[in-house]
Image 1 (cartoon, helix red, strand yellow):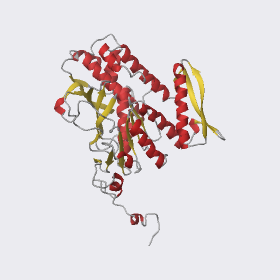
Image 2 (cartoon, rainbow, N blue to C red):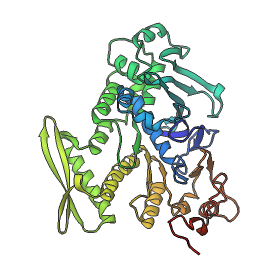
Image 3 (cartoon, one colour):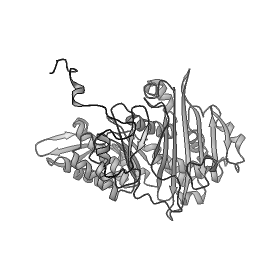
Image 4 (cartoon, rainbow, N blue to C red):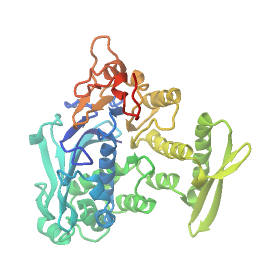
Length: 445
């Protein structure tokens, strides 16, 4: 199991100052109890940068797992649109815990810094460290696993004897690919033994952590391809020392997850996919009681079926591809929430869009009580605050000038009343009804 303890983000969209998002307390106890800290809502006015945080995680995930991501983004100009125009660089740090079945854990910090150069965006820095103490804010207690600057390895953990070999193997790669893509994947799949057990275990834990992350953006549902999920799981199972292999057990659901979240389903997983679609149908019926069934139209493609969902209503049949935006959003939400139920770390932008207030609160309440995973979402809807106020680190407010404030109990005020009355620091809401006078083109008396 993985739990995101803290993240730092800077240089995405209009966020030009570093913001720190806490999901857990800074001083860790012997056993991590995350049961009351696994849901967070991020509020903020329009344009504050809430969606930027979601894009930051999306860029992070794709950079770590996809060796061609930066090349594609340089060609299509997408990073130019996302990375802050003032900073011209994007930085994100993820501090996360890898929790074993006996509740022991290891804490890692992983930093990626992507910078714009004359020939496009490149990885200016990547660093993976492991915490040896119990205070996640104590920089002195982190030991370096690997550290890359401007495409060169500048540090490896003290017991690694293969600095020069790794440097040669990754030459000219690390400015456009993460260390995971350039070194871990190919070297685990080769006869070279230059990834020792400490480096291998830390790097694989990072890959597994990133694979648990799911990001749902408005208008899209981005996640790494099923083929890569299968490849990573095969590498973990076939090419790691026995102690790491044991630590990896229980994570073989990657193949299943890749099937359940794409239209491409392996023949061996067809029955599980049908069950997944049946459960999705029950979920959608809560929102639209005219829905009768979801049929699966499938075509063979080697060992796979190419599947299309047909939604059957009382008076019509509609392919998912031609469904309304609202239904497509709910279908994407269901897949993401299913992953959340299995222990994934799910980020959803504008979770409240197309969902009735009452059902939204019920969903959040369900996730808080029963979900195994970690859920972070952005929203404008104040209704979930009543449920969230009982949890730890559950409500954050992002100001228009990139300052983040976590809600803390203040007398008899509820978070909703504090926020709407402008009592949250840096979010004053200095707007009244008369502020709109004259803006619609007519003089109002």
